[in-house]
Image (cartoon, rainbow over all chains, first blue to last red):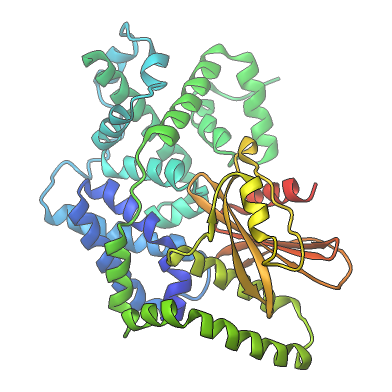
Length: 170
Length: 245
């Protein structure tokens, strides 16, 4: 109990934030974090040392993906090796890119982020909202540390694209 | 000259922005950016995008009900504890004080328990609703609040301009001594600054990691400073430079 309070409880906000972004849903995020916390509590003796936040968020991420699978999304894990085809067209569009990117419109940012597949959305959430270093992101999303940078590069390119799309529609 | 290929550089830009490149690689990227307009343009865009997301994307903190139910699920009697805390806190303080007097005579001061206690206190301050007794970003409100409650005068400054906003202060109890605890916010991280008097001589700054938290401590002018946060070590050290230039 004491170990749980010290190691896990301080990261409930981070856990909820990640689950909320991945599931897109308050009650799902609630269930995911609750379940993850119980798992963490049960397996706490297996956690020897290292970063408790990354360890807990790994559990939260797995639980979030389990929920996503169960809720029957089908395009959610589509990673795709190439940027979407409309990328080329858009990058030559009239929209001033800077205007689209440097938005003060929170709803727009949220909408654009939610449009990204979860594997790209999560690295942006972990980097920009949690301020985690690459080595911890690598642990949480279970990829080699060398891949984190290229994943983020792709994620940011896709986010830019989404923002430009939304900007065009406005 | 510069051997970086633009395609490679356009990925490295991100590591560069996130300060994850080693110095020689960062220098290569910087060199390339100075010479290549297209990469420089993408770098600027990525930088703005980062700023937009950090500023505008909502952060969803755990609802209070969730934190309660999680703790209730793992604890046998959390309600009892809360109840006990609320009503018996003054009694507990008195008992702790008495115990402290006894222990102070028996045990010599040592470093590690203080750091450990500070980390525990940091965690407690975030779990309950007791981060601050006096909530203010105005040092002229926070500092006088301590007067009469402490037998020393802790330095209280706001560093909002440098990105570390003063959130408030509270009384804490470390190493059997009444301690000033100041809280600062950095993005979504909380920093607790514990200040307590010591008869010992000045000691230089040192950093350590305890149970996943970063801790920076030093002694100056007969005061001990202990900073605890889940903030990155380098940022916490940068903050400590502000307190002790």
